Image 1 (tube, rainbow, N blue to C red):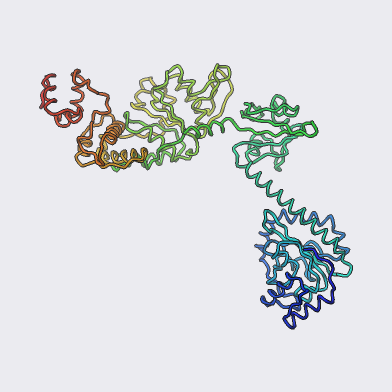
Image 2: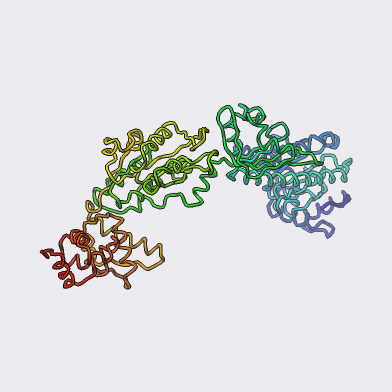
Length: 634
């Protein structure tokens, strides 16, 4: 609140009356009266400045660093009006929201040197009534006259304080204190403080907005640049800085050099066209530098002033980063962890522990095991447990791809082809490439892959541009890959690379004691996936599952348990609910084809009851077919 000049003698009378008698004259400003009463309650002395509460050196340094921008900005304002402060013996203070003095810019305040004052607290509790305490309490500018101040030593001068409000919060108090009240031009002091208040609030609000925008720009997965004519970068976000450092566009002292000096094809990029007023949106751009060639998806927007382009804003996303984002978006990530693989047999525990160790190193890896043993799940688990877990997991089942197109599927096709696209190797950059049925890779493709893995570079089909990549190969093979290599059927170079770490996955019949755990785990997963109640495997059903040989390993067990889970009405699965041949595709062919029937007979181990249950027929019917095919029931 800005007030008109008051009579000094009357103010002194009001003050003395309150100090001596405790009575408040109705002419005392209500905020001052309220503060006097609180000062008395705080037992603040009225004669001399007390010993002030001060921050220790460490905390004072911390606060000054925290508020450095405000301190520097007010220092700039003060330097512009320094002469005014000297002429009128004015003291300028900057206080934080706790009323601690961050900076004393002018003459001593209450005859204290700047060193004594900085870090001191000037709250109502410390020095009683002052313009500081009232501005802090009511969050409005306030001019206080000398006789209204609580401490008599301070009553020779007047003071005015303004709160600095940002986002509806008091962040600072700026105070001007006079030593010689008689010649003080109040209107000039008030105008100066109000100007400081407006300027600081605008500046700090803008700074907060800029910091928020910088935080946003630094968090986006794009490099953002502001460039002026000639190629000089005047701003770049965090990712942009790292990209510029990668092409030697950042000097040793942190400054930026001209892009025209480091981008060899600068005049053929959208930046050059942007300064001619031609925008570009999401364009694939090649940047050629002395160090290497980069590919980005780039947008360039010209900024105009009075119909002339003064600068451009460029937003770019490296193509390899885009591929990683796309890979995550479409679910190219691990679906299983090592803990999702269950078992307690020694052979399984040994394999699981080895997988955990191997996952943490950077070696390429070979998984060996019969079909259905869980190689794909293990590959997912190893990727998730590896340092590459944040990267994509790209899978390729080599046996499903025609040999003549497998090379393009791995390496991609270049711009000279009808279709330009990256291959699985590029998509897996920064992550893992899982090659299932790797033994199906033709010799010439396997050799090319081995050479690319050694060089960490590839060329897409039909082009000569070398593209760097960083991937880990997890290869899986159903048969003995070493024997295939020795026979010359598989590339010895690729075998040497992927076999440095090898994990052999045990057959299900070699870990028969794990079958109950696996079956119940499959049931739990099915119940969770389909939001259904779980079911219990009864002991007779468990016994049946454990007695079977499982030529299709865990995959076959999965199919059998799934069929029992969905076809059983109750909450428990018994032996009659399980059809061991349910997922083999045998159908009704066994009734006409002796070879199919014999195969089922072998799978059942010659056990009549087991075979009858597998084929879902009675024992009497089964005897009839045994006789038909001339088989001995024994």
